[in-house]
Amino acid sequence: MKKTIFASVPSVLFGALIAIAPQTFAHACSGHTPFGACHYSQQIATGIGIVIAVLGIISFFVARQVRVGINIAVAVNSLLLLAVPTVLIGVCKGQMMHCRMVMLPTLIVLGVLALVCAIAAAWAESRAKTA
Amino acid sequence: MSMESHITLRSLPRENLKGKPLRTAALTIVVTLLSLALFAGSMLSMNLDNGMRSMERRLGADLMVVPQNSASQAEALLTSGSPGTFYFTRDVASAISKADGVAQSTEQVYISSLAASCCSSKLQIIGYDPATDFVIQPWLSSQFDGDVKDGQIVAGAGVNVSADGTIELYGRDWPVVAQLASTGTSLDNSVFVNRATVPQMVEASAQVSHRVMPAEYARKAVSAVLIKVADGYDPHMVARSITRLDSSYGKLGFVYPGGITASTKVSLGSLVGYTAIVVAVLWVMGVIVLLAVFFSSVNERKREFASLRIMGATRGMLRGVIVREALIVSLAGSVIGVALASLIVFPFSTLIGRQLQLPYLQAGPLVVIGMIALAVACSVAICVAASMLAMRRLARPEAYMTLREGQ
Image 1 (cartoon, each protein chain N blue to C red):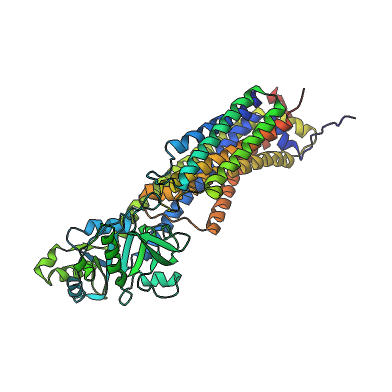
Image 2 (spheres, rainbow over the protein chains, first blue to last red; image 1 turned 45 degrees about the vertical axis):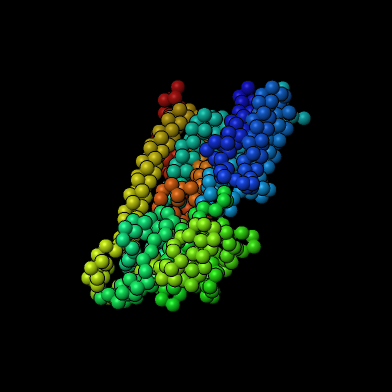
């Protein structure tokens, strides 16, 4: 049970934070006409966050080997999250823009933490002794 | 065929740590907090110090004469970087330059740009006179080889320059010939133009129905006269001699960049002081907790150590086991602490600088690597020292007595 919690709770927690943060305090710049890059990064980050959280919830109810796979999926999603605002889509170029000052670093921090936790969980679950 | 697992003296520290996960976790958390506080606190202080030095280098004048009621706006422009537009006329500027005690003077024009669309912020446009300038030119020439021609722009580090090397101001694209390195000051959000470009800017602003100043002022507007005072003169004395030039000059605004630097230094000093106190208190508490954990752990492990002594382990061997345990825990804890601090200090550096309202310039990679090494080394050293201190207590009594004591 302890291992299940260790392998599942971080995904739920970070997934929820990744989904909520870009829509609340770490939002994109306002006043886009048409929408700028930061808006699309924000929306995709929310989507990825929901996927990570759902994967985390599912991992409570599945076998250990499946949890290993789920955590690998969470790690890959975290990498995707890191790539969205930095490489794939980006944010506004102005250093003083809210999306660059708050949204980008928040997503990077949450992405790195989710990635590290998922890798650690996958590693721990794959080493667990079978009965 | 089954493999028997042997615990050797070499693997003993790792097995001990695994065997007591709660104690290991508690020690790791304490060391994590210590290294996090030390690294984050030191980086914050260092970046503030860097920003202060950068600001001192950029404010190269002794006295700044600005129009009536504009002194606070000019100060804000130098420190917090709130863009503004204010001006008087060139004849006032030339009269000021002839005042007693003025060794060198140059004129600058400040215009605040429009906050264009969603993806750019308001910029400060600074028009300077290359013929007389002694403030901006030396800095520009250290990073940009050549003259800023009419219509060209040199952009600060924080300015959003488009991929084609232009910047949109007042609906027009202006060529950017150079982008300066970050200074950690308001100048990062400024663009620099030749004084002769100012009328073109004013005209462009009129075309987007946001005329920044009347057309007749475009060529004769001066926002500030920057003065270097002659040897033996005090900036306040020069300011008084300027007010004596004409009765109306008494209302002019006088800004003393040295004073701004001094007041910024005071706020910065108190912030760095508070940070140092918090880090010191955390370290004192951390060391006390480490000592307490090591002493109690050594106490509860007396039998274990006595058994090892009976099996032939020397005091040095026991000390080695404990030191290696401390080494593993402290290395893991300090690396986690530095990594966590890095996740806050580096990605959020622009936000930290903005929230502090103080010059904040991120230190270079070599300095950062040095600080990481220092934070890890200090945390490891304090943890190992605490473990050795606890071991000294155990080393004194004889093994038999210790074994009896444990019974």
